[in-house]
Length: 250
Image (cartoon, rainbow, N blue to C red; front, side, top):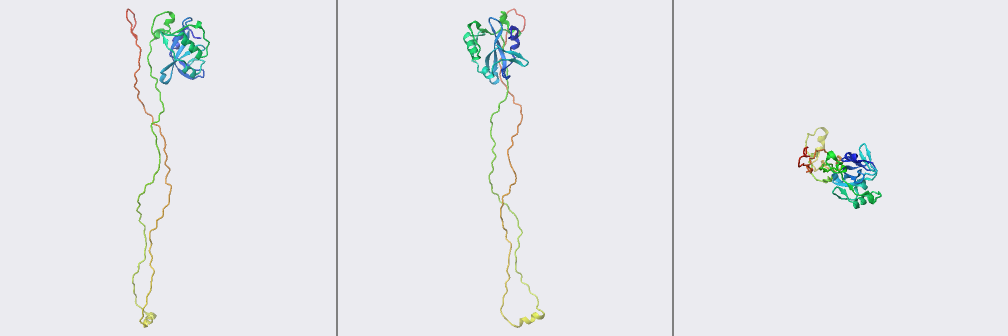
């Protein structure tokens, strides 16, 4: 059980669910008006911590990395959204929160109040002192994976002309004569007609085609790392003092 002095250390601490999952960072702490003990805390949830959920500090324990509560992460994120008017949780809304977390509620509990004050006095309202809680926005930057395009590998057929030189041979006839001598002279006793025939041949180019695999082509994804500059406006609350009060404005 946390006491009044613990409220200062709770603000800004990391909150963990029963499964040891980190839920977010504690933004504000609400004290019980009767006991002055921390009763509720708001935890920043959602993308970049843009939402706040109420979680009861009943059964919460301090751990080395922050504060652990006996509730599931989804149960905390799905808690009813309530408005704290004048720094207090209305009785009806508080009862709704108790029902959500399965905690018994009675009329004797009363409203829970938010400790006012600057960072130097986070629990000043519990001591009856006047003050303001100063807050500011912080950037929680992360990354998300989005689809930016697609690459497709396909093959298609083109036709191109190839010129190849092939050596070819062909036969030709050349007339050749030589003197007749010896016994061959006796063959020419008669005058008669005659003929002889020679078969000629030549080589002609012959082409046939075959398909041959040349290479395997594929797509490979590579990751490049770069630095993305983000510029965003954040709001900060400032405090100024009027009257005879020592100390600088914050």
